[in-house]
Image (cartoon, rainbow, N blue to C red; front, top):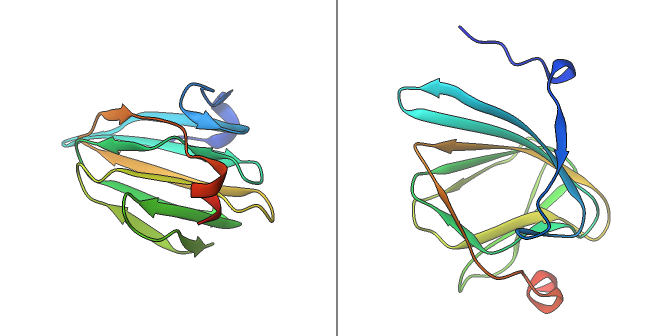
Length: 128
């Protein structure tokens, strides 16, 4: 059994090469090893979001607070609220972040996965 105590973990600024706007993340790497699972608590300021990206394995997003905006390439911009769970399939090109009305925090669970990063999400794309 492992316990990741948020208070004991260091947070870091999100990489501006892969995020638009300000966000911070707390890593809980190797939360499980069979399959390899990494967990990230990500706090987004209003309108902050990831770049377009995809994962080789599934990703689960559990929204903890605020409103999460997200989009699959070619689909509409959608929203999830605290308590909602968003599932993203392997290879699905997508982005996610906070709404313009306020901050958002989610936990991202990446299962047996590596991430490929693409271009930033434009303001027009973000607005939907």
